[in-house]
Image (cartoon, rainbow, N blue to C red):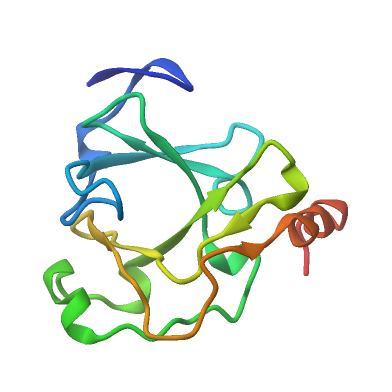
Length: 154
């Protein structure tokens, strides 16, 4: 499937890699089909990724796996919020958090309060507001800078 995106130009997306966020993204409930585009400089696990909308090719959100910056991140989520994603287990659950990158990159933050949870077996997902008292704007610039200087190792 060919998509003409704002950030990446025309790209070919394998339809088998399209993720359906059944309730959309908070603030964008009509955008439900997405794919992940990995930063070319990274290995997909230690780099910025883009959650690219297939419904609106001009829309893409920067995301990262939270364990890259917060290894102990394990938010509390009510079971009924995840029920429609199917049988979630540790080996088929993928968690992403959105990144806000302002013009002053040192003010970069991640949203730990509303992760995106994806069942990798079914490619169904949802953005969930967790029960824990976690920040919507957690500063991460210094953490990412430190990791890069250390070569990505803890």
